[in-house]
Length: 291
Picture 1: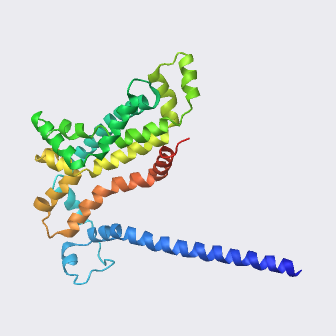
Picture 2 (picture 1 turned 90 degrees about the vertical axis):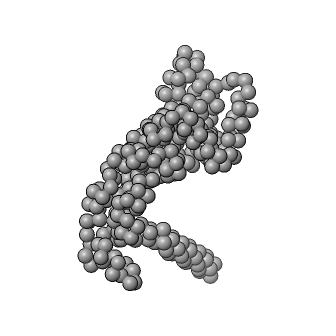
Picture 3 (picture 1 turned 135 degrees about the vertical axis):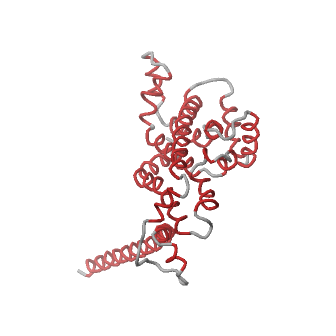
């Protein structure tokens, strides 16, 4: 009887420790979540305040008594924000589509095809990741300028149609597919291209989806290269269009209108991430695990 009482006390003590540990963990995660989400809340709150209301606040308030959507109207009328959106959409879709073609074929070649010097070539290829991005930008700028492709969509798109990291990630994922499938397909007379499209891509779909989403986010947030290669407003993207909004649209002091523009620009990416965040995590975990 005493032994049973002792075991029961031990179980209760273990349950109590687990409950306390879980409670503390959830409290810390909640606090961290609030810290992370607060900038987004502040951005949306500020965008709903009128210019006069915002400037009259000597101490910033965490709420507003008279929200207004006028700032969002101004975001599309003071500057050609719709054109920036259209340019960004063209740039994002074209760049992502071309990049997928390039990295899928390159990753498949490194993962499945046998040719002389493959290991050395891939090592040299990976070493490109060690080159500072600033040097690549300078080289790309000189090349695009010499080709007279500044202020054009090809000039914006071409330097971004490949990625060493994405090729490596997809190659590692391709190599997880059993070799027996490839050998069986070759026995049946299946071409490499058909095997890639019918077998490899469906199996590795989570990683391909992840790369696609990450590339879309990367293109949408691209700032340095579009800012460097375009000085014609007709080719501005939403990222470098923000500077035009600040300088020639609302002015430096109209913070609520600026925040409204930032909210409008941020919403597509937030929605995209919320929809596909599980796919992103699944693809990254599969791409980083071998065997």
